[in-house]
Amino acid sequence: MAGVVADFVEVLAGEAGLDPRQTYWLRLATDEITTNIVQHGYRGAAGVVDIAGEVDQDEVRVRIEDDAPPFDPGGYDPEPRLSVPPHQRDEGGYGLLLAMGKVDEFHYEFAGGRNRNTLIMRLRGGTDADGPGRR
Image (cartoon, rainbow, N blue to C red; front, side, top):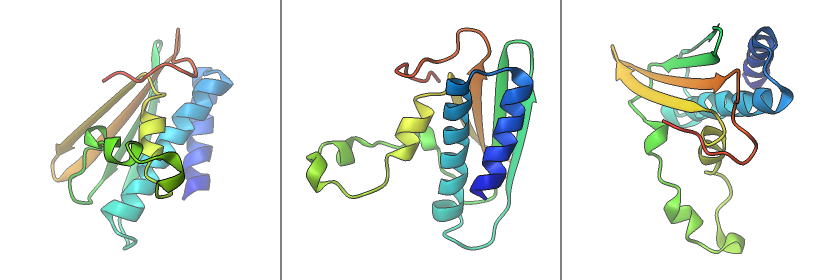
């Protein structure tokens, strides 16, 4: 699925004129959300993940919807993992923190029995490599 997600975001970003850095972070965030849906939401079972994109004059939006149990990635607290010394940390569990902090906005809602994650990257003055995402 990662190749499909990457291709989708690359085309959308190209249509919008995102710079390579913004394209990378939007692709990473989209990939992290979809990977978490498959691995944790559906727990490896079959399930539907719908991805849609939209470009307007100011921003690019990627909407990811699924039927897995409700989960708000924005509510994920990495603090317990980060409080452990680096050499003692378990592998994994940091992708959401990294990816969501690099898009300009992230929104989550559970509506109509579906999770809806929306990632937004602004076309002008987009996020820089060190800037936090906003909600």
